Each structure stands twice: as structure tokens, then as C-alpha cells.
Image (cartoon, rainbow, N blue to C red; front, top):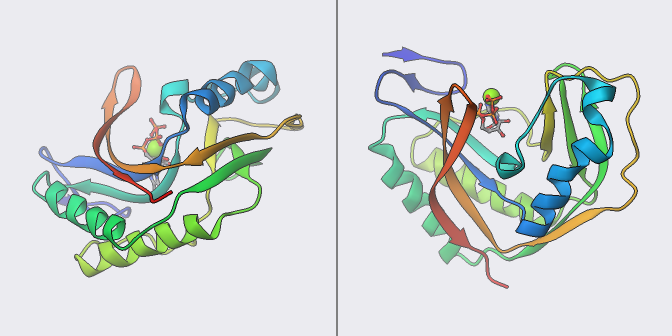
Length: 190
Ligand code: ATP
Ligand code: MG
């Protein structure tokens, strides 16, 4: 069994998982349409995130043995039961991270509920024995990878949706790129 820097055991029988938020169908259409509307491929090159894959990562867990999925779901249920609240996410700006080569949608005002949810998840996961990334959490919605931008377009109108649930997602690597498969969903109190 090998260990990678982003956790974890990598082997024949591991699954790659992360906690994330998905946009509702309208926001998904809007975010998915941005690449074309803002001509991001022409401006920045690279490869766009398929609309169905657009998400906001809460916590990246990494490669784990499938036996651990049950524990991950238990941690998540504990957070739901402690009364996490629904909140609005508003993408206000298109940004570029040079060192990662990604173009992403930036959340304008970061909701306290989002930070609370991430902190609760991080705490629950470390209590359950998962070792997580130490870097500070920077919410972002990746729209393009392997990008290289000189100029960035303005986002004329913000894209917003109400977050009512979050999920544990399995990331499967296929010849057609990453495919995300939900493992569990938890709702937020409205
Ligand atoms: P691909 O790897 O095919 O380009 P992807 O990066 O979306 O697609 P994964 O690598 O499985 O697929 O990552 C799933 C999510 O977790 C993404 O939002 C990604 O940005 C995030 N992620 C991946 N690796 C890490 C890491 N080491 N630390 C924090 N977040 C990560
Ligand atoms: Mg990746």
C-alpha cells in the first residue's frame, strides 16, 4: 500500500472521495454556459469542467478504503443533526489561479454558514481519524483547467442559488475524465 501526500492509501481497492456542494439546475446551466458565453476557451485555452461536474468542494478526503465510507457518512450525519443551516452562494467574479492553472468562479461574500459547515466537517473527520489538508480553505468553483489567461472577462450578472444540501461524492477516473458519483446527501435546515 502506498501513501500519497493528499492523505491516504492508494491501492487497488481505494475510492477517491470528497464532500461538496452542487449548484441547483438553473445555476448549473448558468455556470456551465459561462465558458462559451465569456469565450474562456479562446481567452485561456485549457479544458472546461463539464456542466454536470461543476461543484464547490467542501473538504477533499482523498483515497480511502471503501470500508471507510460508512464512517464518513456517520460523520456527515452528525453534522446534519447538529443543525447546520441553508445559505445562499453567489458567484460574483471570474478569477484565475496561475499556479494551479485554473479559472474559477469566486464566491463574493463567503457565508458564515459555509465556513461553519466546513469547520464542522474538518473537526468531525479529524476526530474520526482522517488526516486532512492543512492549507486554509478557499472556496472556488473550477470552470477551466490547464488554463493560461492574460485577461479575464467580467461576469456581468452574479449567479446565485440557495444551498439546501451537500454531498459525499466518489470521483472515478475514466478515459472521459472524472466522473462524480454521489455516495450520500445531507440536508441543511431552512
Ligand atoms: P481531474 O482530476 O480529472 O482534473 P478533479 O480535480 O475535479 O478532476 P479530483 O481530482 O477527484 O477531480 O478532485 C475532486 C475535487 O477535490 C475537486 O474539486 C478538486 O479540486 C478537489 N481536490 C483534488 N485534490 C485535492 C487536494 N489535494 N486538496 C484539496 N482539494 C483537492
Ligand atoms: Mg484533480
